Image 1 (cartoon, rainbow over the protein chains, first blue to last red):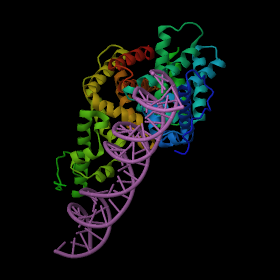
Image 2: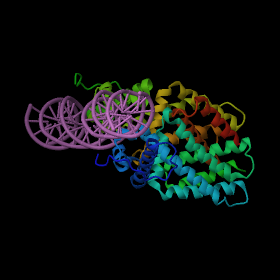
Image 3: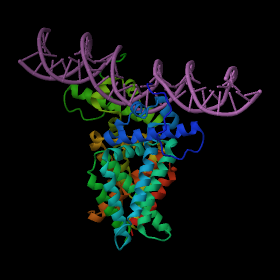
Image 4: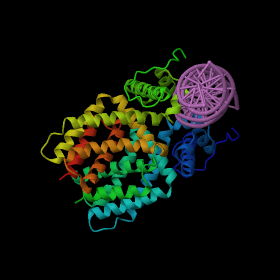
Amino acid sequence: MTEPLPVFDDDEQAAGGALARNQAARRRRVIEATLELANQGGFEAVQMRDVAAAAGVALGTVYRYFASKERLLLEANVEQIEVLGERLQRKPAAGATAADRVIDVLTRANRALQRRPEATAAMVRALGRAQPDEAEAVDRVTESMTAIIVAAMHEGEATERDLQVARALQQIWFSSLIGWVGGVDPAERVDSDLATAVRLLLV
Amino acid sequence: MTEPLPVFDDDEQAAGGALARNQAARRRRVIEATLELANQGGFEAVQMRDVAAAAGVALGTVYRYFASKERLLLEANVEQIEVLGERLQRKPAAGATAADRVIDVLTRANRALQRRPEATAAMVRALGRAQPDEAEAVDRVTESMTAIIVAAMHEGEATERDLQVARALQQIWFSSLIGWVGGVDPAERVDSDLATAVRLLLV
DNA sequence: GTCCCAGGCCGAACGTGTTTCAATTTCCCG
DNA sequence: CGGGAAATTGAAACACGTTCGGCCTGGGAC
């Protein structure tokens, strides 16, 4: 390693001592490097050695923070999805009916995802490979996806049926993304599958 | 190799000459070995070297027939799914309404899949990892799943809407299987998700 | 300030999917 | 039967995720 020095290039809250601060900074750098690589070349470009090198950290250190490549990608993308969710909320869904609003928000979400096709593909691939250890991270991602849908349906409390519909749509969304990422379907198919499903589910 | 002899333990049509016959037999042995290993230990137990050894074939030969591990698992499982589809047809779905029939057939299908959890997990994992090269194999699997659903809906020609519903259900089915295999959800969740979705989609 | 050690950090080594290639065997056909 | 094409073999090498054992450091005890 040519750079064994502790570096603080992070804007997080510095809660604990120097150690805790360094750890937070390292973790952040690893995630940043991951997103960078994922943006450029997708899942296969995120090679653990490269992530480590780009983050200025040893390979073993990456594994100290993230138990596996899937976990790393998942955790890096949970943030992204959550940010996306917030952004979508800020500009509330347009449309008179719930169906219109859901279609609107999903279309916008997909547009955002397709703007970084490689990164999206990497995230979806990580989701598709998840094993029991990663269940929690997977859950957080799908939870975010569901939340985006629920929020678009209406303002107040969601009914049981709303939640069922939202889960179904999230599952269809995920399947479609897999299909797109796997080269089975074109990107537009994600939108059209979802629009069709919304029309079937939200009478 | 201790067994270089050509073996014909296959019941397929012997169309061409000895070469074609041997190739068919080899291919079959590789698939058989794959299913065997997948049944026992799932995805990670299907190791290419072991498959080759169990099939009495060199590693390079396995790759002559199947471009990748995913492809191998996919092709091995297309057969399984198709057989399952036929078996399900033989005992037609029970129920007065389309919804009941679809739930019935999906429940039976899941019971069959859960009887070989490891093999199912291996197939689902392969589906989730698919890349563009494997698109065709993926398509055949999802096609079979959709066909099972369509067949349960009614006898005659399927309407456009039927096909949309069937595709949506297939996508939900797949997502649920991923969730189960990934340890996010218990096996029963596959059934309950599908039952819920059927009730929402088939009024 | 010095000493000590739990924990962080490192990178070499391992496992498995994939590729490669020369040598050998099998098949087909004249 | 003989020759050449194609398939198969065996073994080695490569790529990349993951693991492991030892080194180093920060920070508490004194």
